[in-house]
Length: 180
Image 1 (spheres, rainbow, N blue to C red):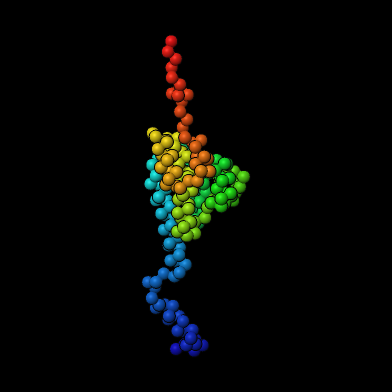
Image 2: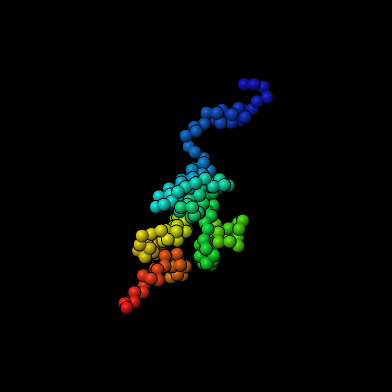
């Protein structure tokens, strides 16, 4: 042994050098689970018809329906989603999302993914955003509206907020031609 080096110090060096390394630390395990949650969110949203995924500034992944942004997810688990103000106001009033940090007086909301339940809630919010675009493009918007209402367990309030996104029937289709 070298003079001036204590047995305790030498022992700590040897333990650190030769300690088994196959067990990830708790923070590493938690980080891996968190990244898996974000990956599941991305996989789920990107599986919906007509959704494309793009890089977004500030370390995020953006989901688009055509050219319209459905929402984006930052690497830190912050999900930002644009909504029309009435839907955004209802989400805030019911505690389903938070005001967006940088643009609080807009239609944008923020949601933080920190658990498996949060992951399911984030998927619900992204699906709500998605449905308003899908209704406009659907071959049978009434059927899609009914299916989405059931899938998302929409309350009457949210059903009424989504109804304006249903394509309106053309007036000439409702009126019989005058026979003359």
